[in-house]
Length: 368
Image (cartoon, rainbow, N blue to C red; front, side, top):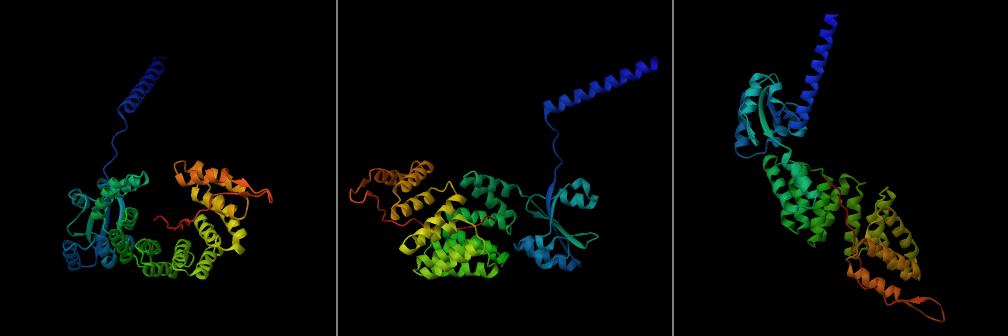
């Protein structure tokens, strides 16, 4: 009986202590996570080869490039990326070497079972910060974080691409070109980089070079509709209407169910009386895919005005204004449409709205 009471008391005491510890953890927060390190490795067969690598590193050659060119170790095509490592989980010799490395530093040579090994300590932190700032529209801190990441990881294509995209948006075209060209040097088959180069050259007014970049992207991937759409835009800008129509239709026939392609082709058809009905159908498809794109609503309203469907034009302009309430052009267009008067002989409305400026083409790019 006494033993049973003692066991019961011990159980209650254990439960009490457990609940106290849980309460303590909740109040104080979780214990700190173990320190981990983002590590890349380069492995050579001989010490002489490893010594040569150290010389090249001191000259500023990126670690990841040397891995791809000279390493016999793991994850060579990924720059020797070993992910995040807990130094306490590796051998004492490796642990001692890693503990002494700051971010952006490489180790001395260590002979391991893989061969003569050099370690590089880096981080993803600045890239993740830059990406988060960019998505939040905070471009200045995004640039600062991405530049830090590129110092540590000169060949991280994601950071180069994102920073290039920011420079392009701020019309810093030379800087953007430099970054996208670096990606092509790292990966000569990067269709994203060639397409991005084309967009920058196009904004600079260098249509010939833009066309060459889009064609390079399509030579690597004929189904990359973003480059095909942008190539068609170049044809429109250079007066090659038939070629533009062919490229837009190739993109659609290849399965590019993308709103910008439908919009751009409808915009082209808008100036052709014989294609007016097709243009309306294309714009309806574009709006189905991107219902919150105000310029698509304006485009459809323009087409309805041309086809004499006044009430539908008014409805689309109202939707455009609801999507972009600060747009003075939409407000003025809607006012003119609503003030339309009817010709007694025909009963058809006549509106003062006759837009004389073309809507801009819609370029396409894919995130890295």
